[in-house]
Amino acid sequence: MERGNLTSALISGNKISNKCTIFRETGEVYYTCERKEAQTIEETLCAILFITETIIKSGRHICTMDEAGKDFIS
Image (cartoon, rainbow, N blue to C red; front, side, top):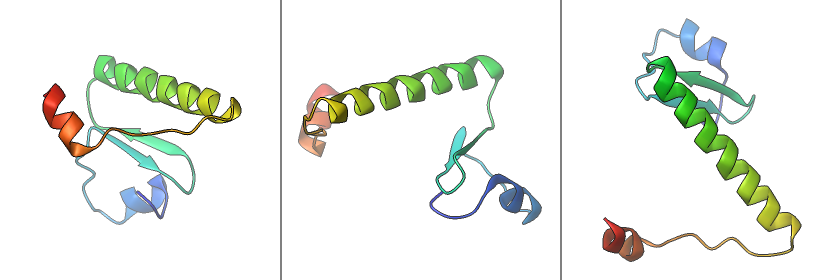
């Protein structure tokens, strides 16, 4: 979520249905899945952040895959 925080989202009564919701303003992460799956998501997020930070610190540019590339892999 681009705006808001976990407390506001829960108080508002809106159901958070994604397995993992990240609140960008606060850095809060909210899981609505089993513990094992949440841990897997958490480890994946940590790996992505580590890799991204390492690439940026080395002065390189991050180039993401386009839809054609994603379709090819799928």
